Length: 426
Image (cartoon, rainbow, N blue to C red; front, side, top):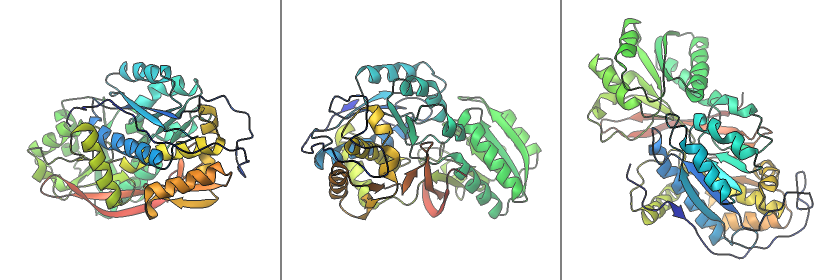
């Protein structure tokens, strides 16, 4: 991924005023909240460096496009919203994310967007939520975050791996595989996804012949791959981040069938620049979300290039990032208050029940403008995003979600085969 030319992007345009009518069925403008300063500020803590750095361009692009659209729709509480981003790095550099969280909190942000990795969120979630600031992640999937003691300040627009694990597990068995090996990263993300995938594979009648953990940022996988081969695996599920670039060549060296490798969201990337790109032709992987709106992808890519001078070659969590920012804007408008306290108490309300505002149904700026005006007027808003219906539950998880199943071609890029919908919390 290319370097980020601009670390900060602040958009401007205004004209929406706060009102004082109650929002039915939820927290409202009449409730008592911590006082906001009147300007909704977002601070991203995202992987500009590290094993998940390939995810930051689409996450930044989604957030920046949301900020642009919100401000084009009139802003929040009569003022433009602002956005800034700092590096989270990865679990192998645990000092980075807390320092970045300290910086954005010191700048007075109302919402922290991120982290990308569940393990990195574990490093900063207490720091952020105890400061009564909302933390909303577009790509955290570890199941244990559902019940984290966050005081009601943590949300995510990506589904728990209880859904992805079930779908990738079923996909492996439905493809006719009976002896599955799982290579997984020894983090909260890897362990949670491994547990669900393993139980799903076994419940479907297949056998997990090898279940092999590795530490984050491991570079040598020869021994692990030897164990996969020795176990007689006919397929292998790899749950990793950037370590995939070491795992695949190790499998290729042992002449393992490259079409029988299964990827997940942490490693489902564009591998067209890798020498082994043709080896994985026919392999499959899963990624939260469904088919992306083409106009949305184009707008995000154009804005990203304009802001950062680089092409947007990945789209993972692009929609989830956009939706996270818009939902927080609607929550602030519904409350008539931009404090983390007010936003946290209104996020569930603006994602469920009430009048539908589907941003994928037409002009996104017009839809957001109408939703903001409805929220301002005290109406019950139900926002559906580019990632789907969202519908936050009491834990801040999206209850309705989809998982896309992708397949790699000979050029090292993947394309969507189909989308499976399900409940992300069961």
